[in-house]
Length: 326
Image (tube, rainbow, N blue to C red; front, side, top):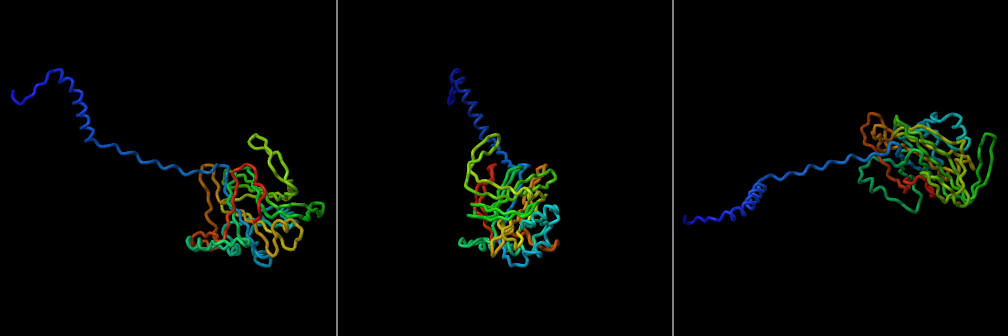
């Protein structure tokens, strides 16, 4: 038949596989490409159940400021501390209590808390490195049993210390001495955290000390440490509560004088429990510091405007080495 090409059978058979390939290619070209499944969002990172977050402030206030005395402490619950232990702190020139709820008005002023918008606050955070900052802040995440050293003073060439003990007042002079608080925490299932605060004095020349960690002994440089065990303080805090430590005026030579007095100023130590995770994984966060205000106020949370954040090394199990005081 004219115009019709007839191929031998073996040629037709050899072209059949290729015909199948062409048909499949045409079908694939018309089919709809599968759409990739949406990327699953990762769940937010959670803290370890035995870790909590603290914000630690040192606030410099004039010794002559009347609001640094009884006017401030009317907003502080000193009854949370056992009467006998509180008396020993007073005898050594120290005062301690717990702040719950809003920040007292005096602290609001000293810390320069402001409700200015974030952009304006950034403009206000200009730091003069030639003078001591009025407020310094340290952000620390701690696990149960992990010690944190809160350095309260510079290193003194000589430090004449008067100690009020059960059997009377004793005096001794220490060389190359530095005051600090050792802090531990113990989170509990109900969301409360036991804060363990121990005043210490490091003195003398650095020495090699054996320190155990994770079943391993290692030599770490350090200085002899004097623990004031009779002043060891344990108190429960919940998220947002603060532990306030201050010195008593006119107590020269006392622990309070050497730890927190810096004439013509004194330093207030404020330890705030910022975040804690409950057993069921819920993050209990307290938000930013807020000024003392009426409970019905809808004002947004405020942040400090003159805060210098100190570098921390909380990732190590051992406490930090000698640091410069705020």
